Structure formats: structure tokens, C-alpha cells
Length: 283
Image (cartoon, rainbow, N blue to C red; front, top):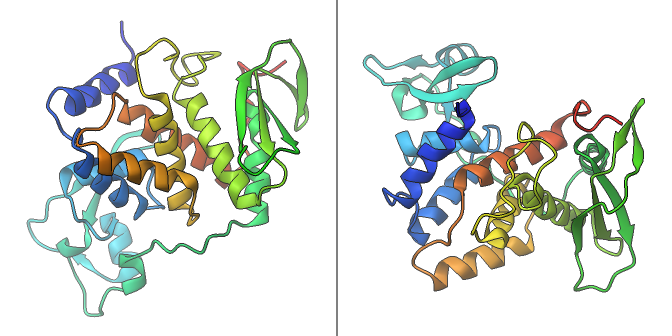
């Protein structure tokens, strides 16, 4: 029997490749720009919001609107559905479906601001989480044009991961001469390849094995990196790649948008907290 995730993935792929939704380059660019405006909402949930109500400015639950913003839900307003941890779904309402005495803060309607920098603590947490998914991180003296790469480990070895030892399944090398923002973008890109399943998987419970699928791997990885960096306020080379491709091609290449969004969400989680070591990785 297929898992829930596999069934939902098939449905989303049908939406894109058979129905034609988001197959047009212009439509995909609009979707990506929409998702980046909601950095506090998981990428996949932002997609659900865009499907239900494109142009949404700000969303929150009824209780949050009442307690935080002193606003009430308009009679007859229809809730938007998103996924929620430990529950099937969660209901939120868009700004236009609420009433309040005071004007809603403009800064919250346009939350995305690019400052081009990332906090040192966030970057260090990001790198510290790599062993939890079997990645050994290294920096090397490369030329300016070489950002980095990730490859499956050839030999069996382990590394320290907190108080435990973790298997080294992949080795990532990043240019030590780059800024932490450039390193961040490189790591996001390489993890995009990993989490989209381009290198296989140690367990389908972690991410899928799509190593033999006929897909545009670079477009997927660049899309992941673009989303992660844009939502973090960092400009990166993926922006030029994605923009250039979508301008030159009316249709997007063969990709799985579901995997791109899921990968972006997994990477963002690595920047927010220290993750537990996956049991598949414990040495």
C-alpha cells in the first residue's frame, strides 16, 4: 500500500504535469514570489494558500487575529486550510476577511526584506545540523568560481554528532574563501540535491530516492536554494539562474514541485533549531 506522502505527491504532480497548473514559467515565478513573502509559513503551506487564495497579504488563525491584532473574522468568511504538525489540518483567515479599528501594520503585509546578511549563530546552527542527516562538512581552498559540491561517501566512517556518533554517508565541500552568505547558499543548493533525492537515500522515510528519474536536477536544486535564500533575505546566484531560465522558456522543465517545497522546508528547519540525530544515521 502506498504511503500518504506518496499519494499526495502523485496528486500534486498530476496538478502540475497533467492539469497544467504551474507548468507555465510565468505562473511558477508568481508562485515562488508568493511563497517567499511568507517566511513564517512552511513552503508547502504557502503553496496551499496560493492555490486557495492568490494575492493573500497576511494570514492567521481566528484566535491569533483576536488576541494579537484585536481583529474579528467577518461573518461568512471562508477559512483557508493548511497542514499542521500533530493534526490533519489547521484553519487560517486572510487579512481582508477580518475587521479591526486600527490599520493593519504595513510592515506585516510586506514582511520580506533583503538585507543580504545572515546571523553567525544561524549559519553555525545550520552547519552543526549537517551530521544529523549523514553529511560531513568540509571547507577547502577553491578558486572563486568553485562554490562546492556534495558526493556520497566512498568509505564507511563516522563523525561526532553531539553526544553520539553518526554515520558519514555524504561529504560536502564548500569554498572557504566565500562569505558565510555564499557558503549558506551553496549548502542550501547541495542539500537541495540531497533532499530532492538526486543522490538516492539512506531511507525513504527521510527523503525519496529519485536518482533514476528523468528530471531536471539542477533546476530543482536551484529552486530550493532560491526559496531558502530569498526567504532568509539573502541574494544568491540561483536568482539569476531561475530568472534566466523562466524568461527563455515558456514551460518549466520536468520537476517535482512537491519535492522542491519539501526540501526547502527541511533546510529551513535546520536553521531554526538543533535537530535530533536520525536513527538511520546513528553509528
